[in-house]
Image (cartoon, rainbow, N blue to C red; front, top):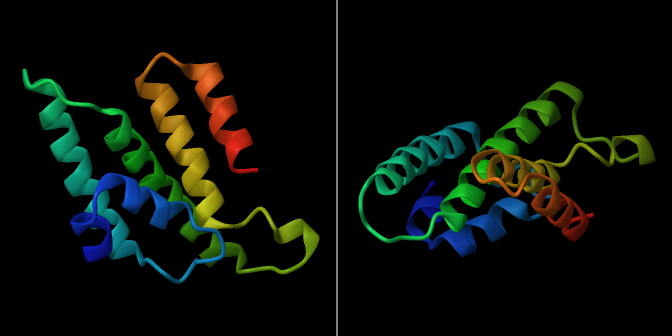
Length: 120
């Protein structure tokens, strides 16, 4: 959790997008960082401070996408065949970041296509 909370947002997103690292973060560290970052992002967005929300939106989406990816790895396991290549928490973090960002902002189709094509 320290690597996710102490580093800046760009470095944390890089950690979450890494593929092949399903044992790097546990459920407690991801859920703690998600709760902390989501509450602070909501507080910042509601205040009158001019601050960017792109990185917090990508970070929050990557956190919940990585949690979903870890759940799927724990259910199906890590498979090395060609059909199990989609079960990777890093890929689910990229899809989660794109889905959260497109759900909060109004850049639904274009940004989702850019994010998915960037990591495929």
